Length: 77
Image (cartoon, rainbow, N blue to C red; front, side, top):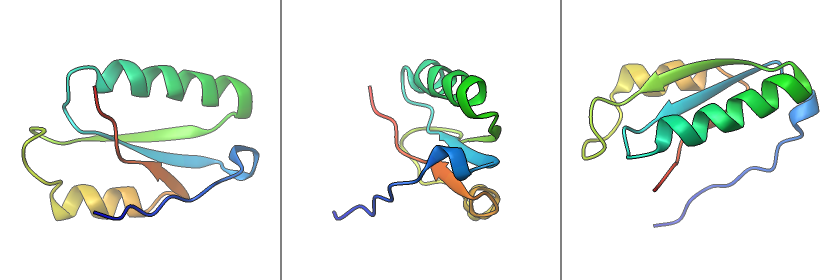
């Protein structure tokens, strides 16, 4: 599977989305990244959570993430 990776200058962002994919340590990893970016760049975050790691994100979750300037959507343990 090919993944699209965008390199984004965090200093240019004001709002960012995150997808907690319900994997083992996703909440801890995303929380760490979020706190660092909030402190360093003042970015505000919206976090969406999948019900389970074994199912794809629902269209509502994807639409919510699409409303942000950038999003982190893949975390694995």
